[in-house]
Length: 330
Ligand code: NAD
Picture 1 (cartoon, rainbow, N blue to C red):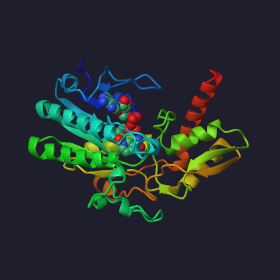
Picture 2: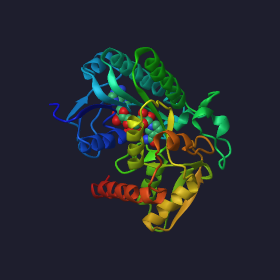
Picture 3: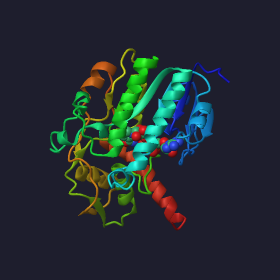
Picture 4: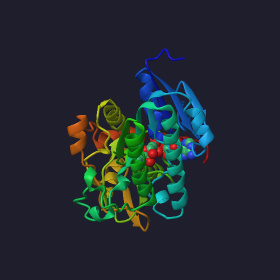
């Protein structure tokens, strides 16, 4: 069973980042156990073992952590895009589901130990008061305090950062914390209400007639940066391989664009003539951008794939999904 050099446990292996991570670890010759409440939606997992179950259940988590793994990645969370986390309708489950998962995972790790433990935090921890100016958002790691995240999702991430760091301090775990900024790419959620803005916009453009129109929430002048999945995986691996540094550290892109610009890049890739109709809807903070100074200094990492380069395969993949559903009359 353990002929491969290293073992990894990936919680959330059925999700977007988790399923790509499993592929990367398999390629790097890890023996991988994937865990999730569901299998990956869009391609078969390459995990050596894939266990389906609910990480909110303590007994299940204890069964999954039945040995000491070289690396543990905790990516499981109740999450979604603006249409899911900013309406207020899901706040109690967002905050409690993920907090319970993190507590269960840490208590299992306290018993079993692990080589290194990765926790995926988020740019959503940064305070609203620093993200009011779309041209000059402040998102350096130390600007997270005094805390004022704009969602319960962000508050849970901040709380769980403290959980991981306190278990490191008191129970000698080696913890690594990344704050991801808007990760996108093929095989991410692209419909159903939990999709994020790059995937949602690709879907709208792919579904639109030519010439046609798409809807966008807000005035489109809010700014964000977006990180391509392969760059994200490189950043995670670098963080795991960097000794004596726990983070939290931003894993994001510094290529900040307005949401209008994002949509126009996608429209150009699709080579369609499309008009944007701005409507009321949840939009989050006015500006957000990754600040990669710490990542450059500590990890010697920065993204290599530009937004346009990353959106081409992403749009093409979503366009194919849209065509497939159309063929099936959905
Ligand atoms: P995702 O929703 O695709 O993956 C999360 C996975 O967790 C899902 O497959 C889901 O089924 C699983 N899960 C949720 N509840 C579970 C439970 N009770 N038991 C077992 N599995 C459960 O999200 P993702 O984009 O792959 O994100 C991975 C991690 O990175 C999450 O923690 C997320 O908060 C964080 N993050 C992601 C982004 C991003 O842009 N994608 C940005 C910041 C932070």
